[in-house]
Structure formats: C-alpha cells, structure tokens
Length: 313
Image (cartoon, rainbow, N blue to C red; front, side, top):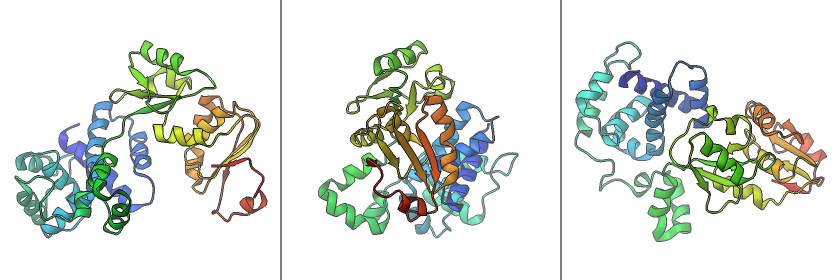
C-alpha cells in the first residue's frame, strides 16, 4: 500500500470509531478482518496512524480549533501527521491527492491547517493543562486531587503504548514451558515483574501464527488484568460470576484458577462481545463456563441469582 492508502484506511477506522460506541481495538480488528488482503506491515502502519491520533486527540483538537478548522477524523489525521509524525507539507499533499485508494484532495480549510502547523511541535505554551495531558477538561480536577504534582508523570505513563503481555494458561502449561515454546518459535519473552503467570514480549509479534497461541498455551492479557483475576482468589469447585466479561479475557484467567472445576458464568450486556469469547474458550480448553447476555445490571437473571455465588468479579 502507498502511504496515502495507509492514511486513508486509518481515517476510515477513526470515522467508524467516532460514529459508534464500540471500543477502538474492536473496530480496528473488524476492519482488518474484512480486508485480509492488507499485509502485516501495512496493518502496523495503519494502526500506528490510528492510535497516534487517539492517544493525542485532546492536544490535536486544541490545535485544530486554534486554526479555525472543523474537528473530525481527517483534520485530526492531518494534524497528527504534521505535528507528531513530522510529515512535510509536500508529503501530506502528495498523499491527499484523490488518487486510487488515497484520501480526497484537501479543501481550502485543510490546506490552511497544514500550512499553519508547519514547523510547530505538538505541545504549545498556551495549551490548557488538560489538553497537554491528553485528558478531558472535566476529569482534570479529579485527577489533580489524586495525583497532585505527579499528574503529568502519571498521565504520560498512561498514554504510552503498553507492552505486549501474555498470560500463561495454567490448564495447559506452566510459565517455564510456555516460555520455552515461544523461544522455539523465535519469540523472546521474559516473566512479568508482578504477575506470576505472565510473560512479556519484546516488540510486536504476529501471535496468531504461533503454535503456542493456537494451542492455547498463552493468551494476550495485560499484567494488570492478570493481577485483578488473581486477586479474586477463585478456586476449584466455587461458583463464580464474571459480571462484565467482555470478550472473556479475565473469564479465561478465572477458569484457569478454578482448574475447570465448579461453575463460572460470564455475563455481558454486549452480546456480540460475548460471542467472541467462544473461540477463545475452546482454544484454552475451558469447559466450566456458561455465557449469558444480560439486558442490564437489573436483568431478571441477576435478581434471581443474587447471593448464590462465592465470587462476583
């Protein structure tokens, strides 16, 4: 794909994210799932453009408003390319030329935006503190009360790309065996510093192609989520409900702690997200999970089963 085609794809993803209430990673995954022809390198570039805008949307929006241009996926992408990825005006104009698979030509306002941003860096002395920290204005006083002088440090850390963490599926392997299996496929992994069942990868790895992943030895899961599941202290034979299961990541972790014994109910108000967990459960060898879609937290099922679980996650 040309650089312009990659940018056009990223704008399409941002447009869909803005149009609905689905998580950004789900939107991006669906976009690529329906376009198998996009190769791994192009996917990485498209995802890079997309998440650059998402991570810096507050500061980009400040610049766009300052330049008197309408805020939207295209203007955010143009600003991200100019201020963060440091594209020169000529490269931006060449990519937005209306050619096949590339974005339409810039309108006069967009041309003015690109000219105005030339030579600037992302953060400006006049930028409000909320925008400089990439947070909504309404949230700033609450975060300030929590972090005080450490607000900038904490927000910078939260906005940095997360490492790729894996949770070892203890139903099928221990951490040492999973680490050896990954190494045999040329993937270096080290134990996570806090979670006793986690492995951290160096760089991006196409996990879907690895035997260790296909066979269910490991699952993608941030270390913090692993720790949350461990703190639930679910054990074999218990009755446990994961009350906000999503696509089932922490459900899988709870099931492994239960050694597939007992009853684990995965509840979720978004049934389409719950459906995505079926394949993950099969791959992990989990068979003590019941999936249940709820209408809301006041669903009749909830009232009927109140007080009947050993753990509510």
